[in-house]
Image 1: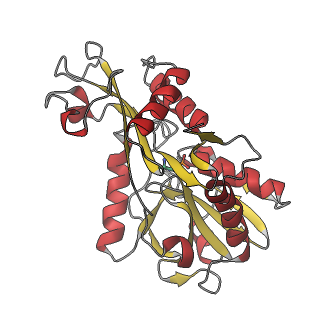
Image 2: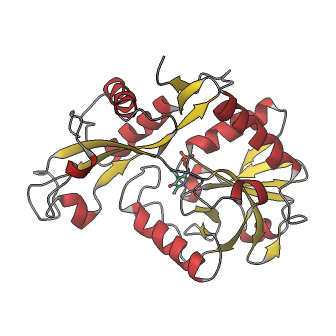
Image 3: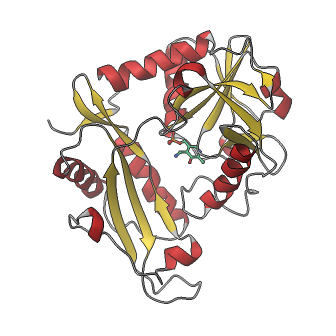
Length: 297
Ligand code: PMP
């Protein structure tokens, strides 16, 4: 916390911190995997670069360099003697003025680590999940910048997630302001149709997911054609395969959308192939892309 190791119970902020009132934070969600070759963080540099960019969009200079944050993340994991964990670096506007103007509030930095299992449930990665199209849309491009991973954006995500769960679904998929498919509350979305892999483009109000970029790369390397295209809602209904990607969700197959079965209702061949390639990296530590940072080396 601001450069020091602080015990979990002592890691506190003042109730009048700017972030609590106005959602002013920029953060990352990163996983450290206990691979066969030792604990390793997946794409740490790319996550920290995105964090720096998220802050930059809001005219904030990152309080620490990527090299410092990288070192601090590793030290925090080592101090906790963890093997597999979730890593949450966050910059936030702290205690100062209470008004909306953030200029006189410090930018505090925290890196927290904790053990965290499968995000969408135990069987999700294996069997797939049931999702709905949300009645909540993602924000229009000139409202909330979605390429910034910032606290306030997750109020929209919470509406999507809560509505989906209230209606018996595991997750919701939001449309963008123009009515095209955007993404899940915390996941990017992919569709397979006639052997081609489609995903929504950055301008469909998505966060530029690091898992998304990895999936695109792995697919291209496997000779699968990838298209980043605006997607009509009904494209989800007539797809052969649909899946989510994300640090928390990893690669999670979607078996139905609005109670319409995707393909035959089972995870498809392309989904399985990409899951296997992804899991080979994070479970076996087979890293030919330079995506893993080994923590205890
Ligand atoms: N979209 C949103 C809204 C998210 O919160 C996340 C999770 N960070 C993603 C997509 C997936 O991004 P990544 O693969 O970098 O975790």
